[in-house]
Length: 185
Length: 172
Image (cartoon, rainbow over all chains, first blue to last red; front, side, top):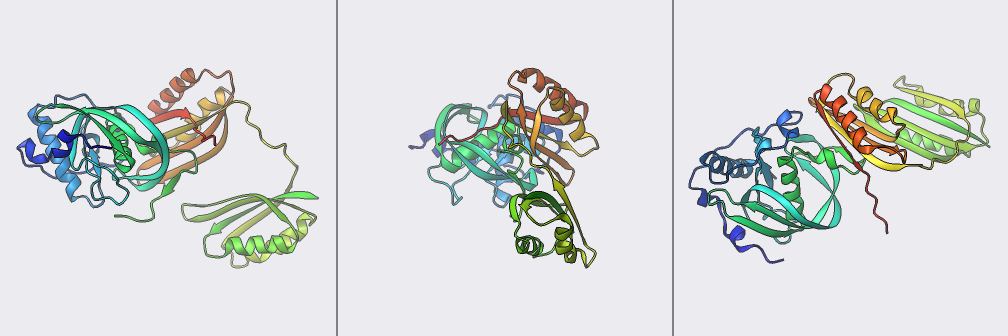
C-alpha cells in the first residue's frame, strides 16, 4: 500500500505548540466508556491536545497510539505511530487524526491486544487487517483519507474505538479470549 | 461404564494436573471434558471422565491429593447428558466498569428473562475494573434490539457499560 503523502509527511512540528505529558487514565473511568465529542481540528485547545497526545505517547514505553479519552478528555482525537513496532508493515509514521472514521475494512485477523488504560488484561480481538480511514489533521484541518494495513490498521481501529467509547474488552472474541497480562512494558 | 464429575480446588502448585490425571489414568478412566483455571490464584479444575471404576475407588485414588490440606477434591457420579446443540444464535456479552456487587446477577438476569442460555462465562477483577464476558445462545425468536436495551438499562443502573454482539465464527 502506498502511504498517503500528506499524512506520511506530517509531524507534530506542524502544530506549532509544545506538547505536555498527561496522565493516562485507566478503566473503569467513565470517560473511557463514553463516546467522544466531534472536534474542530483547528481550535487551539484541539491543537494543544494533539501535541499533548503525541508527547504522552512518546514517553510511554511500547505505546503505539493514544486517544483523547485515555487522557480523560471525551473527544474524537488520537495519535498513532507504529513505525518502530515489529509487527508493522506499511505505515504513516507519527500522525494525529480528528473525527476519524473507518470507511472500508477487510481481511479480518485475530490477534492479542493490550491497552495502557487496561493494564492488567489482554484480549484476543478480530479486526480488519486492511482499512481505509478518513479523518482531519489537527492544526490545518486538512481532510485526509488513508489506507492502512496490518498493525497500523489494527492500531487505527483500536484508537477509533476509544473515541467511540469502546475498549478492546468490548470486542474480545469470547469468554476465553481475555487474559491476565503476563509481561508489562 | 459410568461417568464421574471431579472437582479439584485449592492452593496452586506445579503438578496438580499431572498428579490428578495420572491417578485417573491408572484406573483406566477416560477424560472426556475438562477445564482448569486460576481464580484469584486458586487452582480450580473440573473434569468429567468415563470408565468402570466405582466412585469410592476414584475417591480413594485421589485422596493423596488432599494430604497436605491445601486441596479439596470431590467425586460425583453424573448421568450422561445429551450433547449440547445450540438452538439459537451465538452472541458475546461484555460488561465492564467499576467493581460492585450484583453486576453479574443483574445483567445475566436480563439474558435469562428472554430464555438466553449462557454457554461460557469469564469474570475478571483487575484493580477497580470488573469485567464479565459471556457467550450466549439466544432463542431464534429473540428480539435482540429489545434485549440490548434491557441489558444496557441494567448495566447503566449499576454504573457499568455493556456490549452485546454476534459471536463471529470463521467458516473455512
